[in-house]
Length: 176
Image (cartoon, rainbow, N blue to C red; front, side, top):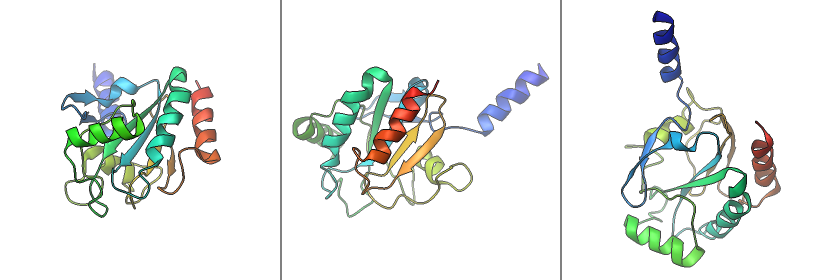
């Protein structure tokens, strides 16, 4: 019994990116552990950014790889130039009508500074992340393998269809 408690304590003291909860774009609570066993790309997004056209590439990447256990999780954030000012409903409508987004979208969160969401605190923290550092802008991409381990970070200007991104996803999909 003591051994089991020690293991549980160890697991809880070393969370991974899929050990968090978030609210989806429709207001439903989601336990990100439901994506365990998949290759997951976590992206902070915005609707009024010069990089917003990346939605098109993200959607294409999702369509091309979803049958192989790949999913993108979009997290709208308004920290950079107030480029995501809309409500969750407006964001959902924008993404659907302009880019045909079908990958999971979440409610607007804070990805930097005061009020940072625990997921993004984890992703950017020196203590917990292999790829620490503050989010610099919209469309920062984090890749999580099937084991729930953070395996890559791509800065905003690295396009979703860049060879380094596509290769990293292919490697993660091919791993057991």
